[in-house]
Amino acid sequence: MNLNDLQNISENFGNTQRMPVLFLGHGSPMNAIEENQFVQGFRNAATEIPKPNAILCISAHWFTNGTKVTAMDLPRTIHDFGGFPQALFDVQYPAPGNPELARETAELLAPVLVEEDHNWGLDHGAWSVIRHMYPDADIPVIQMSIDYTKPPQYHFDLAKRLNKLRDKGILIIGSGNIVHNLRLIDWRNINTVGSGWDWAIEAREKTNNWLLDGNFQNIIDYQKQGTSLQYAIPTPDHYLPLIYSLGLKDKSENLTLFNDELIAGSLSMTSVRIG
Image (cartoon, rainbow, N blue to C red; front, side):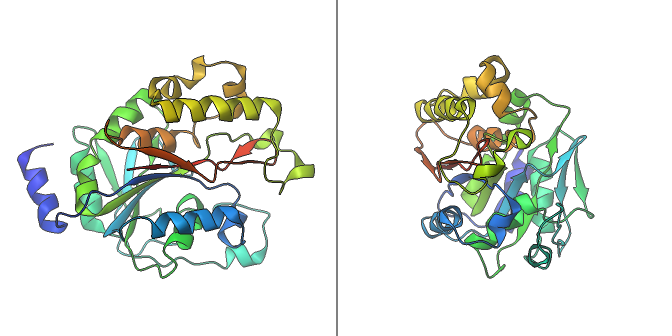
């Protein structure tokens, strides 16, 4: 990041109190329209932090070849799922975009080439949680995609370049799930909070301990951590948003967990606040 980058950010976004960083376990799309302890947890998280100037969301549901940022004025609400009630498809989250923030984000990530995207919008990894935090849709939201060609360490290191945004009132949210294996869902306990297969319980315990101990290298190297993590993370899409959030943590900052429950056998709603 060069001096011009810093000047551009300062012109577009004034200095603010340093914003926390969140990782939100978003779970089922139905959380967008249901009332439960998890959506209350999202609301509580919003009340405990300053109101942001804008939001940058890294969602599990925008997995691309290369890195992109949404740069339109009015991002569409994407219903990227199937088989759910019509009421869920009827939801719109008309938050504005922020092309200036998209541009600054792309510049901060240089020399990585970042494409300014005008087609995507807000997928349910973003709007299904943000709508509970900021129901008036009055805060600009942009999304940054996850480059599926890169390993976890790359994403952890890339996230660090975004840290300056936190001093400009930008709330950075990673949205995914730490334990996320849709093939092994326990349908008998689809809505049972605290329901987890043995491997899911073990994976949650391991990752929670690493998070609270600050042992992020084990989290980055999850593929080396045994069978329970292999079951918990069969694909990296829902896990990598956590890596982005952790990459933004300063050594002196606190890390706390909330919504820390397993559900449906093979999903965890565990969420993280940094700062």
